[in-house]
Length: 233
Ligand code: DX5
Ligand code: ZN
Image (cartoon, rainbow, N blue to C red; front, side, top):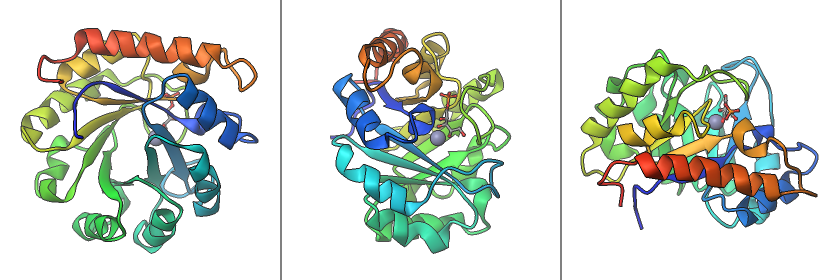
């Protein structure tokens, strides 16, 4: 089940907010491997998206993996609600609270795969003592809060460091922010396997004209796969 082949996870932050269900179905039909769902609270990050009720409404429209990225603080009081909403992967930020180990235990106890997201300034070592509690580490390559920002190059060595730390453990390395066919090769070469992309997937397309989504996903996948490490089987 676990594999390190490059996977593309469109972020619905760049979708039509009045048509999430149809947008999720459209990107999956066009080749998305996972669907990335960004929850923002206007407190941990300077933007607000939606909460567990919206995530629950989206759930039946996703057949692959619903990857829920919580950019909220505090996190713990909301874990049960997002798990009940149907998240497959539930990712919390390392910076969102003082008790990351407890948060990760709560996510797994609620029946979800557990992820940790690291802001650009947070070192790889933030996961050193929670490796047995996580299924995914999300390397933020922009400061969270908005789609369409410029990729922060300084985060690429962090990906390589995490890949080294993870070794054979079944932990996905996800990248979030500024992923394009241009930035993807450096990321998979460094060991990333899940590439979140918002603007680079949704640009030029719509539910009515989803072909652009497919072309955009293929362009990222081809660039990512050509550069992937030889152990990305
Ligand atoms: C940013 C979000 C991302 C966002 C990425 O805070 O977590 O998932 O949608 O958008 P792009 O791919 O446009 O940088
Ligand atoms: Zn995200």
